[in-house]
Image (cartoon, rainbow, N blue to C red; front, side):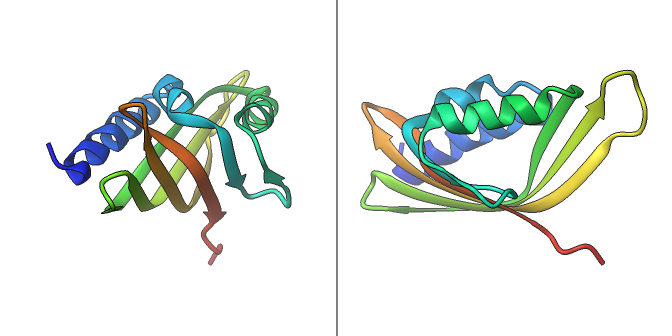
Length: 130
């Protein structure tokens, strides 16, 4: 299997699970030395920092889903990949109510480490509201 096919398979597994509210494959794919730029004005420099932030955001939610739209994937040197995609996050508040939907763009940089594709850098940015 080519590097492109391999990373696409990994990203598709992450995306399929996240679309159902299962973030375990995404969390497992995060490298410990992950760097993340997110919607907040803060750069996360480690996996644990980012997971703590996600936990605080999810604290008021009953559930959440995250879906990719029109993902593109490119590989370089058989061990590095870049994924760009539009995204849609839907958060269901505890106690019911309408879901909170946010649409944006995602860029993931993945590196092959020990046979697994690891996300070493991520950038999430909101789409402008019309």
